[in-house]
Amino acid sequence: MNKKLISVAAVGALLIGLAGCASGGAGAGGGAETDGGSGPKPIEDLVVGFAQVGAESGWRTANTTDIQSAFEEAGIELKFSDAQQKQENQIKAIRSYIQQQVDYIAFSPVVESGWDAVLNEAKAAGIPVILTDRAVDSADDSLYESFLGSDFVVEGQKAGDWVVEEFADADSVKIIQLEGTTGSAPAIDRAEGFAEVIGEDPKFEVVASQTGDFTRAGGKQVMEALLKSNPDVDLVYAHNDDMGLGAIEAIEAAGLVPGQDIKIVTIDAVKDGMQALADGKINFIVECSPLLGAQLVDIIKTLNEGGSVDKRIITEETTFTQEQAVEALPDRQY
Ligand code: GZL
Image (tube, rainbow, N blue to C red; front, side, top):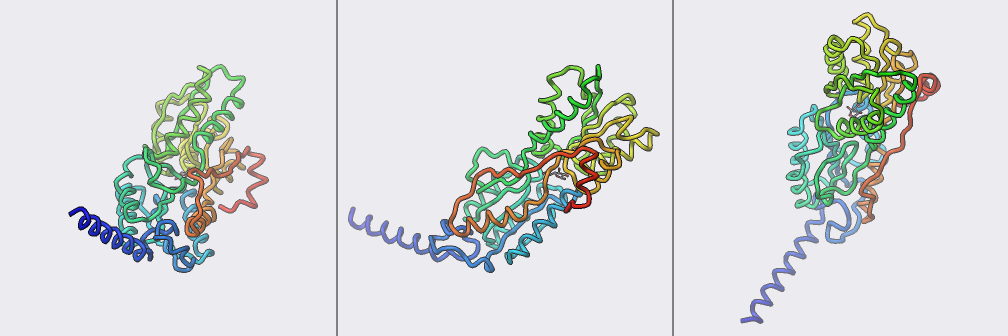
C-alpha cells in the first residue's frame, strides 16, 4: 500500500513541476525566479500593467507622462488605466491585468487600505507587483516587490520646519490645512509630519483642516468656506500645489493678498506651483518628484533578470524658496 501511495505522489509532484515550468510564459510571473527558472524574458516581450490613480493634479499628469515615456523608451509594452481617483476602478484594472496574464503590475494606490484581496490574487497568479508613489497599509509585504516613492512624513516635516522659522517672531499663528485625498498615504503622512513639528509650540493652531482631494477646484471650494469662518488665518498648509493654487483664487476673491496677508506653503513643486512661488503668491514649496518612470523600468528589468530589489526605494527631492523658484523655473521638466 505505502509503495503505491508514494509512486502516485511522485507522479503528482512531477506533473505540478512540469506545469510550473510550462507556464513560464507571459503572465506566469515576470521574474526569472517565478517562471520555473526559464531565465529572463526578452525585454521586447515583457508586458506591464499600470493602474494610475487618475488625472487630479499637475503632479499626476507629470507622473503619467514620465512613466509612459520611460516604458516607450525601454521598448516595454505598457497597458495603462486611469481610475478617476476611485479605488474600485483601480482594483478592476488590476484584475484585468491578471486576466491578461501581464508579466508585472505597477500601481499608485489611491488610498492605503483595501488591497490585500486583489494583491493576493496577483500573487497567486505569479505576477509581481510594484507600488509607485503611494503605499498600502497591508501587514503582508510579500504582496509587493518594492515601494518606490517619496517619504511623505519627511515632506510634512520640511513644511513644518519652514513654518517654525518663518513665524519665529509671531506670538500666535492660525493655520488652515488643506488635506489631500482622505485615506491616502500622502494625506495621512504629510499631516503627521507637519503636526509633529508645529506641535512642539502651542502658538501654532490648526484652526481648520479639510480635504480638497488634491484638486485645484477642491482647494478653492474648501478655502472659500474655511476663510469665511476663519478670516484672521495667518497661513495655509496645502498638501499639494494644486490645492494651494485653488486657495490663492479664494484668497484673492476675498480681497486679500496671497503670500502676504495669508502665507501659503505647499508640496509638489510642479510648474504652476513654482510660477506662483516665483510670483510671491506661495511662500515655500517642498518638492515631491513625479519622475518615477526610469526607476520603475529599472526595477522591472532587475526582476526580469532574476535579481532582487529593495523593498523601499525613496526618491530624492528638495525644497524651494521664492528666490530659488525664479532660478529653477526655466529648467523645470514638469
Ligand atoms: C504624491 C502624490 C500626490 C501629489 C498630488 O506622491 O501621490 O498625488 O502630491 C497628487 O499632487 O495628486
